[in-house]
Amino acid sequence: MECRDWDEQVVRPESPIASLRSQFVLARVGRMNGVDLSRFEFDYDTTWVAFFLDSDLNIYTRFGGRDEHGPESRLKIDALQSTMRAVLKSHQTGEQSFQLVKKVATTPEDIPLLKREHRGCVHCHQVKEYRLRQAAADGVFSQQLLFDYPLAESLGLKLDFSDGLKVESVKDASTAQKAGLQVGDQITATNGIIVRSELDLRWALMQPHPESGKLTEVRLSVQRGTAPAVLRQIDLHPDANWRQTELGWRKSLRSVPVEWGFRAYDLSDDERADRGMEKTTLAIRVISESFSGLGEELGLRRDDILISRDSDTRRRSFDEWKSDILRHHTPGSAIELKVLRESQPLTLKVRLPAWTSGTR
Image 1 (spheres, rainbow, N blue to C red):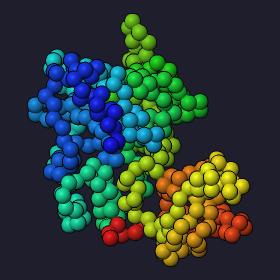
Image 2: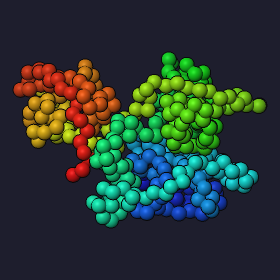
Image 3: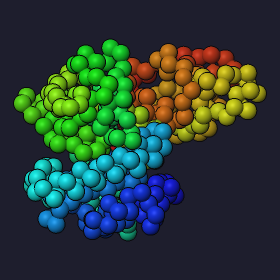
Image 4: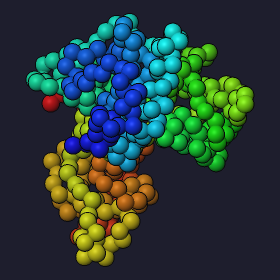
């Protein structure tokens, strides 16, 4: 079970958060049926998320999240403790620093395709999947819908996961460095929203800039230095594609409205050795084709081996390869693939087909 180790850290009696945990009323929600999605907004592909609320269900903060490195890749008990302390302090002092909630409530069952097709338990990832399919069916699907909850790394910031909001490093020549972010800065607000966890930060990065109202601009409030810390507001102007992150790990990838038209897998090390191929390069073998979609447009055949996409030869799984296509291409844009067919190199060129209707 994904996140089992993390879950045990959180719930066991001797947990480091046991004392803090005793000051909260705890409730576990194991399915999304009937849940108010306008209130409980989070990355629905994520495996474990906690919301901290008052008795009126106002949101202090949310905690959790993951990336392509694993379901527990961004979960640290020290960061959870810090977040819990911040929530308790805010609650005990009567600080009304709640996060925004949409006025119109909506549940998974309000998604027409889900209501029509799905029976039984609604899993978190299925909310995202049906939203993508519904957008396609309604003719409003866009690439942007794939890239919500962007990572701080997309701005050039690496955060200390044991803290959650402290800048550990700043990438050279990145948006963050150009804006003046520094190692040791403590992020306190994003786009005018008080943040108490890294997941708060990612949620707030999807909200508009507090002054310009633009989704393409980001404002960070940071505390710099100590005794006393100086509060600074820093505006960042990232490029148009800054929100894009790896999609290969997401279950919702299977509901993106692209007809791939073939199945394939990344060759194992042994299979590569048998063919005299490097372990670090792209080698995805086609195992079946359906004579439709992208596979048909390319003219792929069974046993073709993909070895390059637009000159990118990095080793990738098939899902990671799909992610690369979706990150770098939209319908109508040109794709150039190199394949080995019966050991002979071949170049195939095609344009990404239009999004499908999203229905099945």
